[in-house]
Length: 139
Image (cartoon, rainbow, N blue to C red):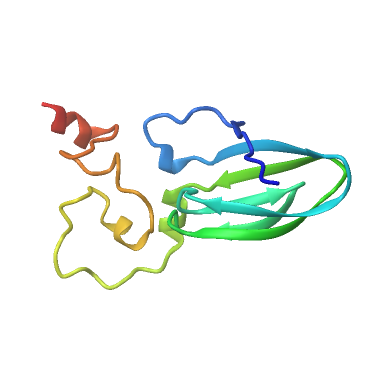
């Protein structure tokens, strides 16, 4: 039997720089008896952890990863939490890569070429987000 979890945001909605804050989403899975299950995970933002009842069961650094994680559910309520870590912190912690031979014109943040995330909202002129470049692109 397949169940789709309904997640609710537990952190405040982000302001203009959503990449600089942590995002948390939680869902509850109720089962009558302890059982083994598989969590299917996909499309989570760049740097993430999935916790089951407070324990990390999966982590990733690419929104394009898909995972099937075997887990053991306890009888009663099981809490599944998705934690999306700040992308800016992750980028700051990465070692400097070799300087690109040309400057990317797709985004204002050149370090994003090393992150496996969507560019939507970060591409001025195509999909402007919030901030100075978005204001200029709307003029």
